Structures are given as C-alpha cells and as structure tokens.
Image 1 (tube, rainbow, N blue to C red):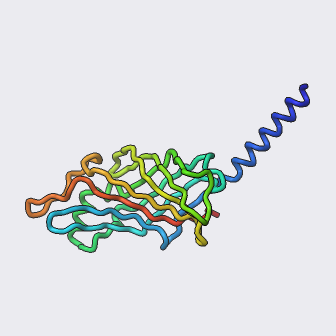
Image 2 (cartoon, rainbow, N blue to C red):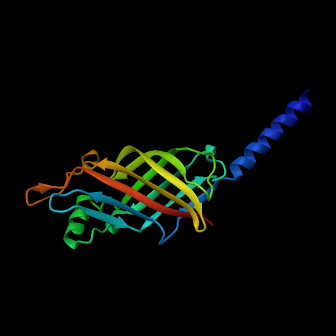
Image 3 (cartoon, rainbow, N blue to C red):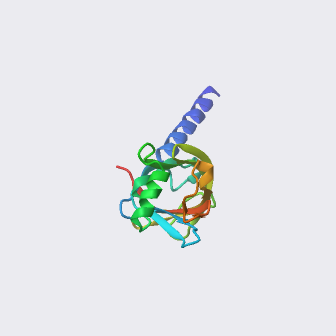
Length: 193
C-alpha cells in the first residue's frame, strides 16, 4: 500500500513538473508589434501609435489552462499622432518625464479553447491592470490569439476613460477631446532565448 501511494505521488510530481516545464517565456517581436489609441475631437478625430513595444509573458500554448501572466510595456514618449504640437501636448499630459512607461499587467486569461493552433483564433478575455501616469486601474480586454509562422499573434482592443487615470481631457479652442478613447494592441510574440 505504501509503495502504491509512493508511486502515485511520484507520478503526480513528474506529471506536474513536466506540465509546468512546457510553459515558456514569450517576448514581443520588434517591428511586428504595435499599440495604438483613437480619440474623438470635434475638429477631427486622431490616432496615436507606437511600435516601441516590449514585455514578457509566461504561458504554454498547448495548455492555456496553466494560465498566462506577463506585462506589455510601451514608452509613452514614443506615441505619435502625426502632429508635432499635439505630440508635445500629449507627452506633457502623460507626464513622460516622471512616468515614462505605460504597462498592462496580465493577471488572468480566459480562453475559448485550451490550446492555440494555426487554424483558428482562440478568443480571450484578458484581465489585468493598466498603469498610466503611475495610476493603476483594473481592465478587461477582449482579444484573440493564433499561431503564425513568425510566432504567436495576439490582438485585443478596449476603451478607457482618461479621467479614470487622473488625466483631464486636452482642450483646444474651447473644445475638448472626448474622455473615452479606444485602445488596441497587435503583437507578435516569439520564444525568449
């Protein structure tokens, strides 16, 4: 009886260890990852974008039940809208000198399927914390993931209110940018070495 219990414990330990060993570190691929936002303004809507995307994630694409954790980072000063004056105002509003980084910290992911394939997108509900100007707010982002020849492709989009992060919507000529903005990411991840 003791031998059976010992063998069972050993089998469970080996199974748990090998399952955990499948989880890998993944990082954004330079030149194939970007983050952007879209804002509404009475004199013309605009979009800001950056390809300066870094971070690291831990997951096993063959078994998403093990969980997904990690952080996506962008340097706020690299966001560009196509207008130098607006970009200067945005950097000041985001206080890039003392808070240079915008982060999304992934705490949990709810996938529609347990493994990622090349043939179909796996829908995701990504839960985590968004940090802008040092202010943390919980955020849920609907997304999708799929294997591609160059790695894991992950996309998601949501909305946020600037005032939730202590940001007063910018004004020009007595008109203000709408408080709610759309945010999105399109990231290709490759295994970290």
